[in-house]
Length: 226
Ligand code: DX5
Ligand code: ZN
Image (tube, rainbow, N blue to C red):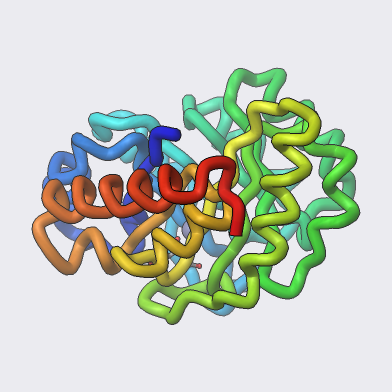
């Protein structure tokens, strides 16, 4: 497995966004956290800012929508060219219909699950999605501690993806560092969002270290067995 590393620009310096984006040119994608102050108690940026990031970024955009009413807003992020658009299961009225709409515009589509959200209702729907985002903190803020009690859910998703021979990426987000990335990889994650642990150090070095730690863990536990 190749571990995909997706730095979250939530941890970057917002007034030096161009430099932040250039500093993560070796990443697989840039994770862009859109928050609306309703779905989560924090506010970041909307389509205009994300459009400028899309124009400027050396790597594709992975847009994480922590917003209410994704039916209204998510298609616009696909239209501006995001590589992937993830909305939250807890916010969507009809997750499958919205996923099909995002795919029809041309982006990969993801469904996000908060730590308390069960994956069981989505296991039969996995072919409708390109990735599942297992939140490993409560969404809203960077710099929180990894919640290991989300790992059984991740492992159940990995088993379902493999059992059905699907190419659905399993992404983790929140509290990912050199230690927790190995735990998530062992439980089946292949795509890793990291904010603080990338931007607190030299981003290129941190990306390489995280990628190495994830790859070592997944080789030690092929298939993501716990
Ligand atoms: C939290 C966001 C994360 C956040 C992760 O709601 O979805 O993407 O940036 O930050 P760290 O890696 O610092 O936990
Ligand atoms: Zn995120």
